Image (cartoon, rainbow, N blue to C red; front, side, top):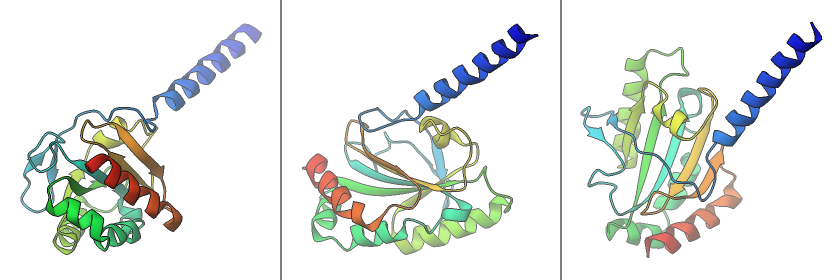
Length: 181
């Protein structure tokens, strides 16, 4: 009986370490994906012309945290250097809505995403199957947001799970400038 309990504990412990090790971090490369946008159901990937060769700031949010990082988006849109890089097609923002974590019907999430896409002038994709959550190495659909900055080669330069603290915004701006120039 002790051997069985020990074996079960070892399996649980090993799976916890594997789950932890799979979570992406700064310096890792973000995998490829293909998702549809909220407005016209067009399929996008990081290789799409809208993102290829650009630094991309991604906000991956659940329906319960869809506004958690609006302060970062507003700050980036208000920064003259970031807007210059955006106008030079060196930087772009991307929102991705996690549809798998919510009891809210997907058609309502899609309506919210459409509204945010029109307001922000950024592309907002919908993730019905936790594709990006898996690519980021998240253990399960969560009720939070994850912010990720990837360079032109899709290497993660910044990642933060949860509501990004205001004091991180200058760091994000500097990283965008560094990797977009």
